[in-house]
Length: 85
Image 1 (cartoon, rainbow, N blue to C red):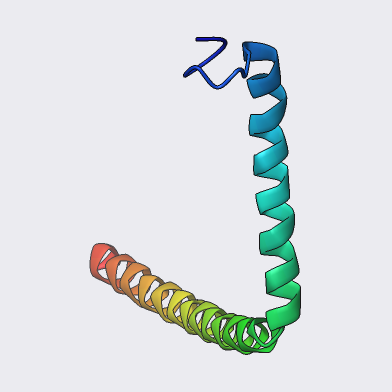
Image 2: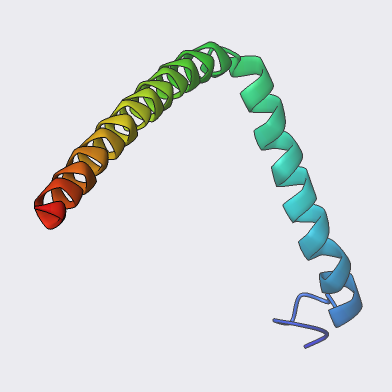
């Protein structure tokens, strides 16, 4: 029995083969994504929808902040009038 699992492969060879297999697999996945292609348009549309939703929420929060400030002003005015009498 030579090497790991009796295959004649030593630790040094394994240390080179494992990253080589990982890099090759990563390149293969990247090539398949490029060939498939259509996913980018779908992702772009979803991102656009999410951006619009976030902008709507932001504008709604700005309006709510203005309303809260108006209510605070009304309450403070009411307290001043009530305290002065």
